[in-house]
Length: 180
Image 1 (cartoon, one colour):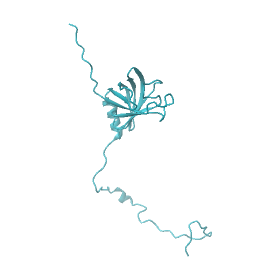
Image 2 (cartoon, helix red, strand yellow):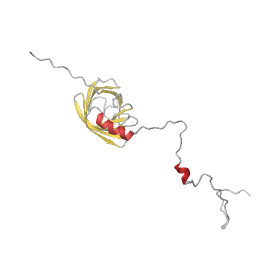
Image 3 (cartoon, helix red, strand yellow):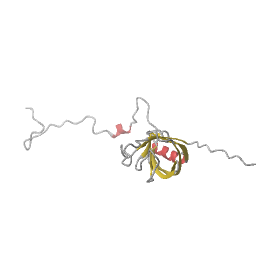
């Protein structure tokens, strides 16, 4: 007689039990190494790469920020003062010069995916940027895009909705010509 699973069974009735042939595993079978058919095993260690990135990542970056709304391009320099590996992440602290505005920044760089989030902490930023937003990068520091804290800027409803930050670790300095 078929019965529904939601149906109450009478007290004292027995339910047939079928043992899984794979369980319990024999300890001898557990000691045999498993062979992988495709022979591809991921040997990447993101924790070790985070440590290497914290030691080798350039401390100075230069580039430009171009707002999407047509405001003028701004020169940017980023100075990293602290890089600490934290598991698969690198904790980033430093300062950023956006034109004439200097702001402290903090962020994270994921060692496995190379994704970056960088948050400027100043209350006043350049045109095209509103406090509370962040730079998001999918390939380390360049290119990254500005992600505003909201889609509509309350200070200027027709204001910027983002921009592009392009940084390079090779900052060229202008050669100084001697006077004599």
